[in-house]
Image (spheres, helix red, strand yellow):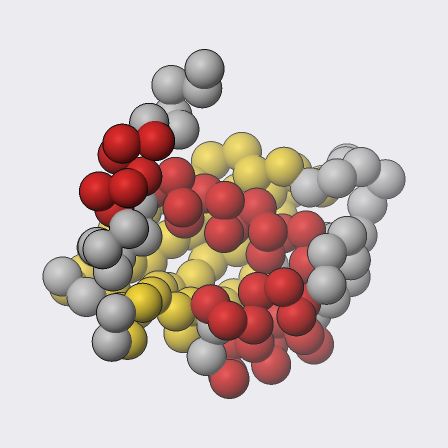
Length: 119
């Protein structure tokens, strides 16, 4: 069992909490990196992104393209307010390392990525 992955009971408890857990953020970052490497369709993330962030993601498809699947190496999470989370991550893309930053905000009873930046 993966010690960083929450137990089923913990996931049920988090179902009603709008701010994503570190594990959810890690999975989301990995999914964004896969879109940027053109290994996942951006439409799969549409429900979790606002229009501006989705537009930026769609325009950057293929930016992380490399010989292997991208892997998130490190991620730093900062919570500037109770309703938002900012994440910066280092993604390994074959022979290169790339930077990924995003902001997640609570909207109603769910969270959405509102900003996305790659380098």
